[in-house]
Length: 174
Image 1: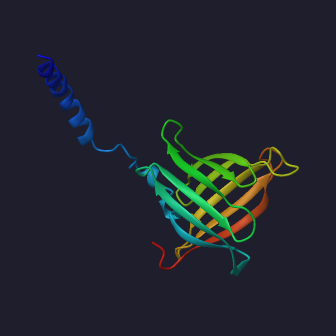
Image 2 (image 1 turned 45 degrees about the vertical axis):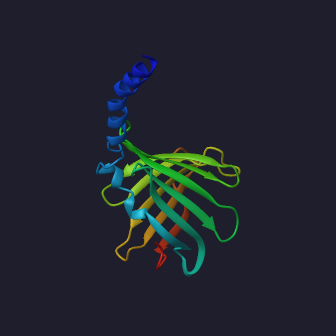
Image 3 (image 1 turned 90 degrees about the vertical axis):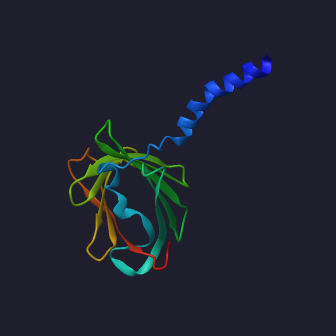
């Protein structure tokens, strides 16, 4: 009798388990979740002012069934860092969280302008704990990506150049 009850209990649970195993993964496949795909790849990074001297490697990956874009920043000098980026439908915006080897953490919010991804947030710097940083990522016609950064210490009234990077695809990278 006990064996029959155990077998019946297993059969009752079996359809739910089979359905759960057969359910397709959720994933993120909206048009918005693909807006930052142009940045995905393995890159050699240069200052825009000196395209002959590489300053970093950067591996940008699409992860978690298309729901995130992760940056792995590896400068040739100094410590590294990285960001996790995702489209947040409830906010109608992209979010980025940056963390680096100095312990700095910064959160950015923004979106696609039709030509570039623009993200803005407070990125604390020495002597500037509330400095705003705006980053614009643009895919250029030659397949490179430009990341332009500007900063503001007056709440966004005025902006100063901060960094101007060119990401070149690493040939042969998978």
